[in-house]
Amino acid sequence: MTTKIGIMIRSFDRLCMGTLPPHTGRIAIPDSRVLYTVLRSPHIDKKSREQFEMRIKKQFLFMKAKPHELEKKLFWLKRHRVFGAQYEVQFTCKTRLDKEKLQQLL
Image (cartoon, rainbow, N blue to C red):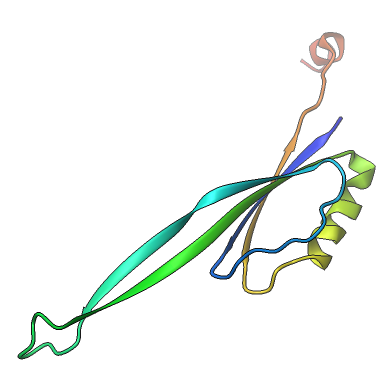
């Protein structure tokens, strides 16, 4: 049984994770940009405007781990975290069920 760990990292700064452990992949996701336009003076100069932008860099890491390696992978993630970044962690486990055992339970 292997566990797949998916980690979505979002940050305003450039993401630098360094070296990755074995059985780990990295997928770069396109950056998103939000543009805000603000009036400088609300009374007279309607045409005088100022624009601000917010860029969000995203990256998706996926790891495959055995159940006994799971703690090591999470410790690696905690040790190499990027400060100021938002993490979203997803776990996916697949198990095999025998038909005989399943019928006995039902």
